[in-house]
Length: 140
Ligand SMILES: [Zn+2]
Ligand SMILES: [Zn+2]
Image: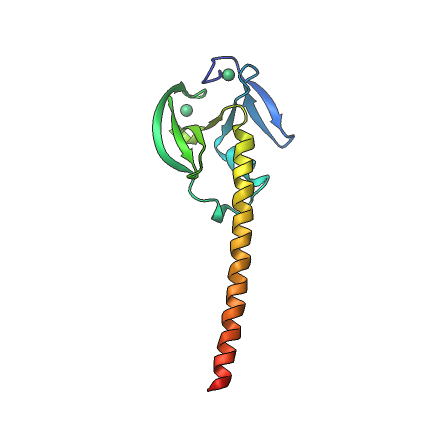
């Protein structure tokens, strides 16, 4: 397989010792199989339900998929300010430029913190409502 961005041959490498990716020794980008992007996110945020939908604003690029050669689609990642490339043919996978893996984890980390804040705010709100109800109940 060759790098979609610089055509250098991709080499297999263990990403943080967790799963195998095809990485480009020249431009330091990497190819993730379809489920590997999820695994990458799960390193920091496992809650799939709250990750948000993945693909927005798809647009075709001139870069070939390393699997099938079809042009990759660029998309906005989970509505964040980050663009990734994907091949949607048989869910081939995703291309991440150098450093974009760190950005993915960074964004998921922040989302995880936001969700936790939101959930604990909801719990507090429910407790407050409960208190209010019992207060109103007593007045009847
Ligand atoms: Zn490359
Ligand atoms: Zn493909």
